[in-house]
Image (cartoon, rainbow, N blue to C red; front, side):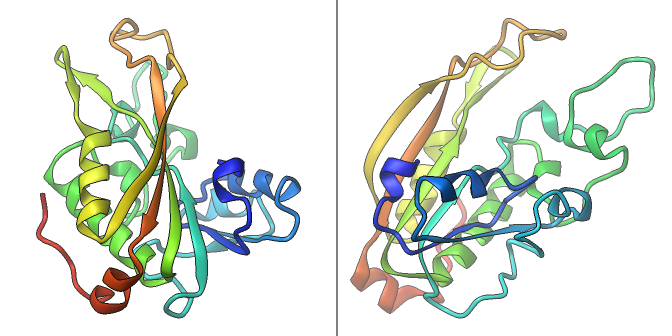
Length: 212
């Protein structure tokens, strides 16, 4: 991610979580790094995280020259808070409460997940300058023995918003190897570098493409 972002001056993570995005600052000392997180407990874990909503970012059009983010994957981490004898590794269990209604981490892979992230990427495009970079970290998962095409969908959604893929790298990441489905894991994550087409961004900043 750092290599992909070299030379960028203003970088935003609209799904900042506990503030991991700020780790890139020591490698990119000239960059202004910003993060937005909707859950107060997670936002409070880094002093530079803005408590806010990825669907309604508090910056003007074209403020950033790069987006760098890792959205929720739509896997079992989205499961609701379950109060039983089993320890479930979910976002809700980490907070010991249900997630904010506008938290994409509460959405399993499906139509609502896609609609939410299309809206989030449209808003991210708004605050990204024409020609800006978008670095996405995403991972597929297996449901009922079938790999879900989460990565391909995000690529197609961003291409529909006027971005083109410059680089797609697979990073070894076998996932958690415990639980009922411990053997049903995709062994890598994707880090994908996009660039927004300058002409498309200038002409279509307020256009939302059809949901896929």
